Image (cartoon, rainbow, N blue to C red; front, side, top):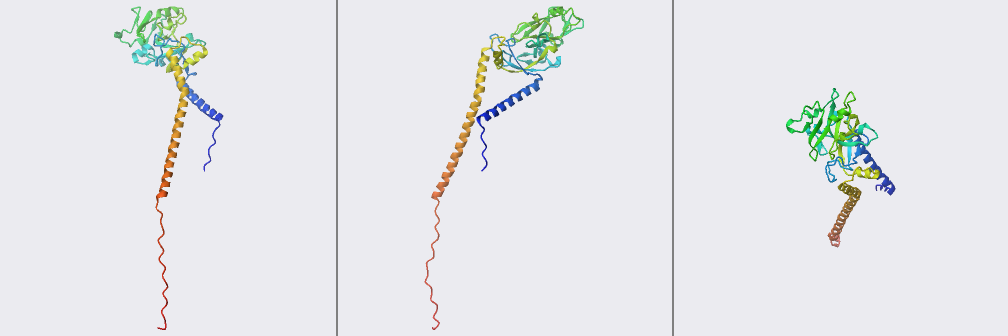
Length: 324
């Protein structure tokens, strides 16, 4: 008979299960790092600046307060498609044209990164008093997608306010005061090239703020947003008291439902597997009992063979008389 395996103690079972869970989590993190090229590979969205609703309702496919997103590393300007690039190519992320970038304000490493959509890339011209925006060049005039406050401005010589029409879920116009940027850097020999950025929920671009008038330089960009794990970032924001805006009620509800499912799922699986195993054992026992009963019945009804009767005994014949 084969030797029966020793059953692990509850403590060893816990350590085994915890080790398996830890190995699984580490494997997921390694895969994320391999894909993004950054560590940590995830960021938590702290505010509602990218939401696609006016009533603080979260939606799958948009970046909402408390969502987790992957951050993919970028190496060059060509790694990022702006809103205007996406309008021409059809490239969309999170419900609108172009890529969403994560960047540090003015390149400060101590600042909390901002996650906003890259609207357009402005290239400072050599004359030091104008910008060019190559993504405007291929947009048909009949689309009436953009215009400038100075009628003499062209895509390769921008000096005034650039207006982009029909932007975002609100379908509103977005204005970029290029003249203000030029004035701010007039004292320098060159104009800074970079991205004009905007939160999908915000009405104005980031560069309209007094502290962020410079276009976002490529080396300020941490990466581009990819994917979404909704709701679970709220756990960190609550723990660190870093919510930048109220958590959407449906996100909170969905988070607790998800947490309950995560806790209950292993228990349900264990119960189902145990029930199936017991059902199989009971079926095997029932089959074995039926076979045993059938054998017993066959043994009781089978006719018993009787030996054939012995031949009757005969008297010996006397030998013939020799005197006759």
